[in-house]
Image (cartoon, rainbow, N blue to C red; front, side):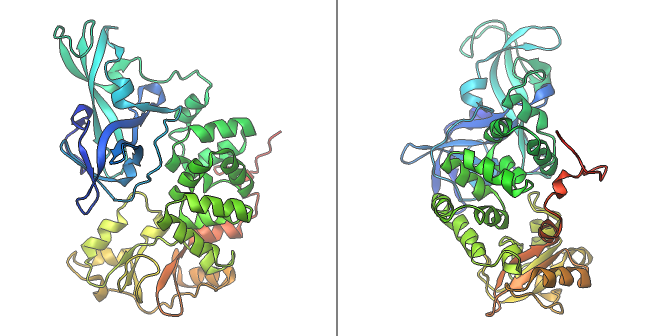
Length: 423
């Protein structure tokens, strides 16, 4: 559903088929999963509970959903078939929010929730619940009496978390607006028990983002306290290079067990990264840069660059390669920088504007070589190519900085620049 598209009431999604990009049915929607937030703010929609052919119910994150309509849901086709388990901070929209008795903020009138509407936030891949369809008076959805009306989420009380609560659920809701790096800093200074509680309450994608910003000791501690299947889910949600860095710190048996639990395609990327030395281009790179074929247009490239979940460094350039498009690709042809994409007409082929002057690095290039390359050419990312000319991935400047900064750099206040002393 594109930005600005009409809202969808969740009752219209109950039981609708879920398809992959090829038109094959994955299953049917049985519920939606949301996370409540403090201060009357609309809940964030985390994903869908989908019943597959075997009658198993699985969780499909909204980041894997590319289209939502009243008659169908389209996904990326990459879904985790593990059974859905509801977490403490999660609410089932159909199962727990509908038919609930709440109050109108304006006058305290008690109403019954008949339906809720969801919408996608503009220019983002996030969804939220922002409207509620209610009936005044006593009785549930089958009762015909009473005025019905649609109100903003903030116009109703009886859903939101209490801000003075101190449970992990309330902490997660309070921290919801923090950037991953800032939330990681908060977690770093919590007690181990409290840190584990908050980690368990975070959804997979959020926990993955936070883990990427934590020191290795904290990463290992948190991962070790998760159930193994949950740990594998979180590793899948992490960038492959960060997941590989974390797994490389674990004993070989634990490492292999978690890799086996991961989706095969995610595990394959991580295994490949683990085969390289840590402080080399191969060990530093991500295997998920933007890759385009020579016959792609600048419009295609800009559409990929606009994806909200890309880091600024990865969005700064696209890599033009022969098929296949997944790393390791076909022959690497060159790079097109974001600024160049803005200077040429949208219908121009990327092959016509590709920069072939800058040589890529080999996966065994040292950290010093990568750093010198970025500094010499004023780049924020560098392509990594194997001996056959296939693109393996890209090293971004943030990954280089992680290895150049002292181990205790997270102890420095990010805003003041002063070292933080706790105790």
